[in-house]
Image (tube, rainbow, N blue to C red):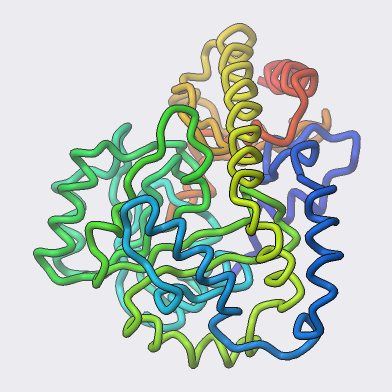
Length: 368
């Protein structure tokens, strides 16, 4: 096992470094005053200081369930398990499916891949196309593994979003072989145009849908969740309880208080979408202007922009040079099972200012 390249990079840089590496939200958009008000209100409840139940406080699970139901995916609090971020959700699931084979996208989320390795899941990569995984290759793999991990909305790292057609086809394949989908959706609310229908809603008995407040509210609360069939969730409770008994009660009560004002949260989400869309467009424009040899698609949501120089450029070697000039990104080889160097890069555009974006791209260009 090796540590996450991204976490190591974040520790190695200083405040002068322009970082396009981590998936960090914009700190300017944190609703600090509203969370402060919610915190003071939550502190009036003496239960906030006590041990809680393992699956999460009832009111928070009810609030999350109501959002699913409103979107056309009938859900009750018994379908929701609160976790310490969606990273813990993935760990719980990986421990539950320990030693099994699993079909994943390539490229795929580095954090999930590390968890799968730690729990001895054998990963089979399927090529990710511009509208989702290659369907034929997916079926050839899934008919054997019967377990898959996918990020259909603004995928990390590629920013790819699955087409409606591929969502239907992949869901049909999972039904055909009576397998299990782990659908990771931390970016689903960060759409610039429209919100997509989750694949899990087509597979309520055969899916685990993972969500998080880290990208939409604040990361430090460390609250995520798993939405699944009640019987499937029961299988995970022993693992959850063996890790931490329950997720942070203080964070849960603060969130519950904050989410009582649904209109305020919806306005906050729209503010994030508007800001991130402007930054995504600007980042894409600057790449085309300053570094046109880097081929990419403009994001339609999420937090990342992905592309490639093609053959001949080793972006893992390039980032070592960029570090010296105080600009960093994540080389694409980190998101593949074999880690062979390639010409691909994942950029995070949400945390930087417009000035930092322009300056950072120019520094990378100077290192080429």
